[in-house]
Length: 373
Image (cartoon, one colour):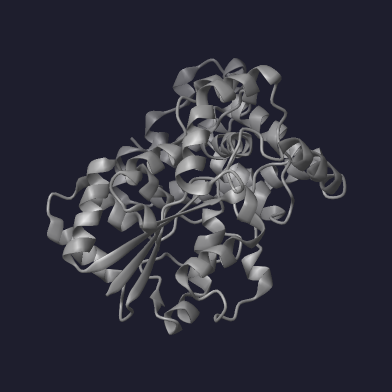
């Protein structure tokens, strides 16, 4: 029987680190009977990825034809009896789509094993807050952002799958407990943890890290000034420049902690009772305060200075301007565009000294034939 191992997240639990590992060790995994197919190329070891499951996710959400879903599922196996799909997109499928997936694997004679990670509420919220700063242009304080949280996607997904996928086929872990040996934990589920040779450094990488205090304050100010339009590009520039840095958790007020307790304590109890037990269970705060003190000690030695961040963002902006100028030049070289839009002549007007029109108020001096019309 074939087995499909679906790693569906959850969000902010080391998915990018796992996906980079799967990609870089795809050949070694295949030698042990596990295919990791349909993944995009990983260009460097700290690349933020979305895994290899988007094609299946898209079909589950939109395809009217179940045969298409079956064909895509089989494409993940190659010549192996086991396949790995890793994608946080999969945590967003609803109950109907989960049932479609289960039905497809049943028809194909495939055993479905779900691998999923959750984490305690405050560490998750802090990491998710940094993610919306980095990816969605958030600029408010975390205390102003927290009241908007109504549900937690990773817990809601577990609620949906728990009634459809047998509990014996669902492998749930507390990320806070396994983060230092995340890859080994997943390899143990696959049954190859003791047999596959790997580089320890590759298994301990932190990818898509959260922000330091200086980076967070810088990005919030940048997003506030520019509307968040470039938050992803700028945050990637900062993170990729120092990927090894350890993040700092933002301060959360007691009032916000109370909001989180009121909203999510029942969910915490359900997850622990259903999947984790009290010993390995999640909580509201985990070791949040202790973690903050550890991070402070580490960051005092490797913090990015404000001037360094300014320099990185200046380099990014110059590169972007050059790319935009090349794009405009390429468009201008099109004959059809030159006939209708004399861009270079208009550029000359834009570059004229500020006082030009004050010195010569005779607008006829700018002749239309000189503009190419």
